[in-house]
Length: 153
Image 1: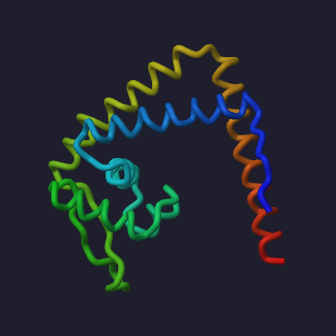
Image 2 (image 1 turned 180 degrees about the vertical axis):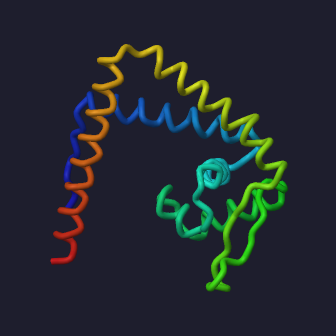
């Protein structure tokens, strides 16, 4: 049974704006010479997450995606992997000196661009954007849980 789906114009516009934002981050990662997954993994490692499981949990990437990102980061000499104490199967990622310099050069540059863009919004706009994005995410998660629940029945 096929339904005719009518999507409100405002939702279509929201989708387009969301895609544009995602595209901006994708372009920045590519400009740094990394895949998007490698860029976000490197950023997450620089913030203190050190295992693939932690990164998967924070970024919602599959284990395979993060594993490929780690391989790319290792090949570029940006991270090194060490076996975790007490768990020989798990490895921790650490930034190399080259990785630290890379983060300082590129990731800090992105943070600064984000800060300037954020500062260009007035306080009311920043609060509204944060509040409404959080509300929309919560509502989407609620709807998706309901869909999953209905699929189990």
